[in-house]
Length: 380
Image (tube, rainbow, N blue to C red; front, side):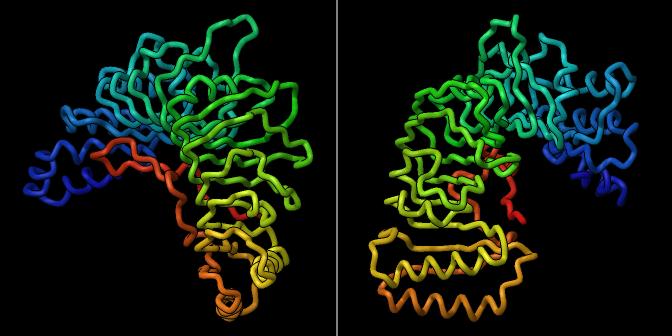
């Protein structure tokens, strides 16, 4: 992160060595700077010393100066001349929207808006494909896509592979998904998914391998509305967190190819004929043990329940007080074995929950710049 500057302070030899390694200066994480007024100065220094290396720049949301202030102009004056070298940009929306319309990012692969509260993102910002011709990863959590009623411009996006988007009460977010459906490999949709007059659409995602639907932020789960009648012939990972604990069908129906599932509802499992791995997210202490026992009892009944299942992970929050989880786990595994099924059953904590296939995004084949589409969630 801020290591190169610290290395220069050790001795003259170390300073000479680190100054002779441009790639060491190409990772610019501004959140490590204690004084906000120094942000522009350090940004300029890192960009200069990285020479012609591709840049990975992270500017945290905590830097929110007024648009006309001197510091903002200094930041922009460093970013704009180097825009052709930026490969990965994580930024607050206010800075992105402060850029002139003619500023382009010809080599940008990953764009992430690192907001912590809902911000408006107008379609106008993405009405020109030439602005980000190589963009593959667009992460827009906590961004509400909007479009002015008098603005008839269509969403124009490059062929995205990875998209994180937040649902809203207008249909703009659906139009954004539709604009890049042909090329998406992973799609992460964050609710609330509410019925507000959005028409259902039929859509095909020929390359989609991972789909996540998270509606846990909705105030009333009974209002859930899913506007996509989607075909997903390549889907292997599916995540549904919707607080619909008694639902028997997933909200996305084309799941015949799914091998990895993360959900908060055990009742969904029979809908996945090719399932090999399940991650069940715990909702409450009672729910934790009850679902574990229900799962094993179904196997003992001899019902052809998830015939290809190999692994069952039960994520337990730090607050979940299961008595003697190791003993319970051993007992349940023994019962599964006696039932004639070769399934590994295991309780895991939040930090031990493995990623699903396709979850970790890399903004370049030669980089270590990774963004999980989301942190795993364990709810009260």
